[in-house]
Image 1 (cartoon, one colour):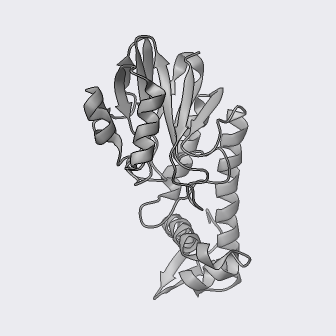
Image 2: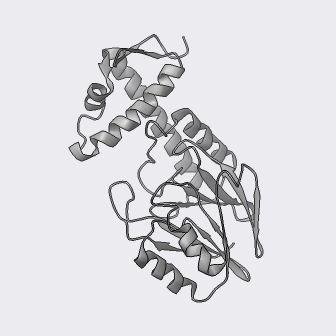
Amino acid sequence: MALVTRVVAPNPGPYTGPGTNTWIVEAGPVVVVIDPGPDDDAHLAALNERLAGKTVGVVLVTHSHPDHLPLAERFASPHHASVRRYPELRDGDLVRAGNLNLVALYTPGHSADHLCFAIPDDGAVFTGDLVLGKGSSMVTYPEGDVAAYLRSLERLAALEPRILFPGHWDPVTDAVAKIDEYREHRLEREAQILAEVRRGPGTSAELTRRVYSDLDEKLLVAAEMTLRAHLRKLVEDGAVRESGEAYEAVGKLGA
């Protein structure tokens, strides 16, 4: 298996955990760097110190969120390395670097431009923010797409990976179980929101307080954006309809 190490960016927080993982993958004469992270001087210095003169074959980016992409060009340029991400890379594209072959997987849902990178020979996948090492990934309105996110999880599950290298927190060695956990969590949240709408109509803000009754006030805005992403899917599924600013139940899902 390819040797994989990481440098954690100094951007800890409620949505980034300990910080963004920048993954360094040994590929024989070169290394592959995945998700250079935020534009931070200390992180740039830490990356260059860790590389210690090694040749960077390519810089890959899972998605364009500000904790994953901004440092990419600034880091890559002195190393004379190319930066590759969606839409230059499409689903199934092969990235060759040194003695390593990585496959780009288009996995939207968390963001519209999200890619994972698989090393099929190792059963390893770099999951960005599709699957994290701890907690759940944010799928928030208007960018987040719950239906697409669930399809992306199914795509990942079909690979039956052995190990996941996420954008935040530690590697996941029980990969298949973690993907199942993520899928069940998202479906349970959908069922919870639908049940709440069936108990009575409400605006997205009202429904957020009813569904996330014990949530810290500082996280309520993100919770509402998550709830609205779920509501959009339920509207598209025909289970919920919008009535002015409120949402109300149509009938049983699939009816």
